[in-house]
Image 1 (cartoon, helix red, strand yellow):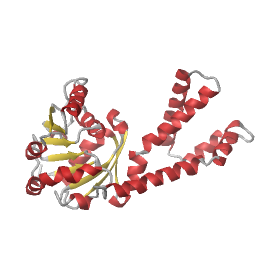
Image 2 (cartoon, helix red, strand yellow; image 1 turned 60 degrees about the horizontal axis):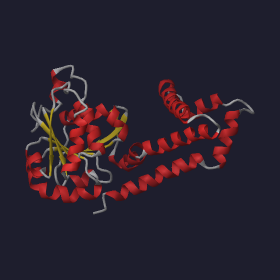
Image 3 (tube, rainbow, N blue to C red; image 1 turned 45 degrees about the vertical axis):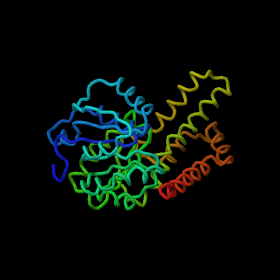
Image 4 (cartoon, rainbow, N blue to C red; image 1 turned 135 degrees about the vertical axis):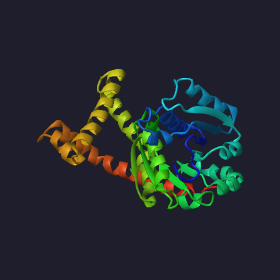
Length: 293
């Protein structure tokens, strides 16, 4: 590998909360690399950095549920030791809350500027430009909570200083969350809303379908199972066929039938526009997060 990333390198996760743990799970449990080049992209050690013992214990508890890493990765859990972790690492995953970034990175700035490690940031709202004051090598990532189970989606943008080998490393690590998509950074706030917040919006739809079944007399367990499979199967159908959702939607509708009747009521209630406006508002908030101190 080129640059300052060595074969048996160390990776630190600063802020190993929900999303940090999702990435930890995806990288640690990734299938064994099939060749030497891919194997070199995986760290020999991951250091998790949290702010107190309680949050560190949550990471330790998570690790207890795992077996050995297929790629031989060891994990060291710490709290209040960001400086030591950064000194020992060649790659940094930044997974803190947006409002904490400045207070966390400012004391680390001399180390980061000297070593110029790759910073993989999953912090909403913080632009590549704002992070480049700490290191010129920045990969900005937006992913989501299903990443913990390997069914997530990651949208990625890179600074100009990230070279081809480092991009390949980022792709190998981050793609383990599920789907991997590269987009220009101008789309990142929209990706934060669609991808990052998206699971909550889908869960609201799932909850609504489940409760509609309950309202009509279907027991909770069965209603939940049916709602899950409707969402799962429909998403798979769109993925496999490649058809536009509207085409498949109209294939379900028969003239004067139940489906078109239900869709008309939903349109009257503004379901579609409500979802669009909700995602749009999430995007507006995402654009402001990096400005909050």
